[in-house]
Amino acid sequence: MKSPITIAIHSPQGGTGKSTLALNLALQYGQQGRKTLLVDMAGYGGLPAMCKIPIRGNGMSSLITVLEQSSELPQHEHFQGYFKDAIVQYKDFKDLHLMLSASPLKMEKLSSHFTEYLIEAARRDDYSVIIIDTSSELCERNIACMEAADLLIIPTLQDVSSGWKIILLKEILASLHIPKEKIFLVANRVTKYSGFNNKEFEDEIGFTLLFEIPDLSKQVQKYVNSGIPMDLAGKRKVSRIFQELAQKIVMQVV
Image (cartoon, rainbow, N blue to C red; front, side):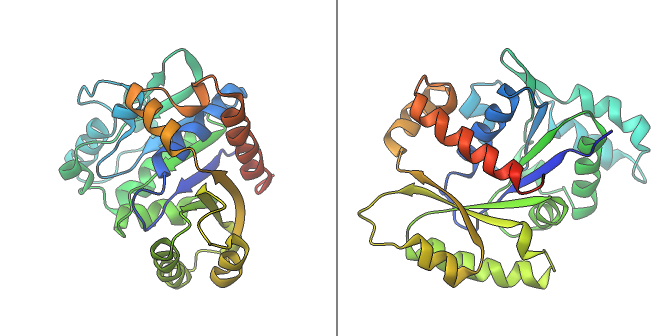
């Protein structure tokens, strides 16, 4: 079985659109017939609210409980049943599955060892694409996600604060020996009025700027509050944006 493409989405700056990007990318791949798993590794996971999915104590919470109760990591063959039970299908999309985050206190128990084990469990299933949404803090869980991923996508805003935090993150990623070739920037909420030159930013940071998403903040807020991802909002222009980005990401590992 061919290994799935594993994509981690991380930014050291909050509010850059990590979860919105993760969900809309996952929808694109699911609609293309690529069986996709979206894993919510954020400490305060927002996917249930964004998708209007009730939290019933399953998802990541049940898996962490299984791992905590074991004196050693269980055999993957035994764990896969728990893993499949913890996954929910997104609405009527048979090719898009979600692994919802646990409570913040529960997520804090995810060591790098547990995180690596969960990612390996996802890879053992029959997915074509695995997308991991992370939180902004630097913790064992997020580091393990970035190290395990085939691609690391960093959404950034056109402001000095985001740029400075990514410069600091660059030093951390280098110390972790994460290859620069698998790291890509996505400039979000791009306008012509920011006075910010994305090409200069790319040169300064040293990471490839893969894509620019125009400022859709007003539309995004409206649809997020309604539980409708932008890709399903009936806006062809928006759908084309995420379709093009999804294709560019896949091309980096083909």
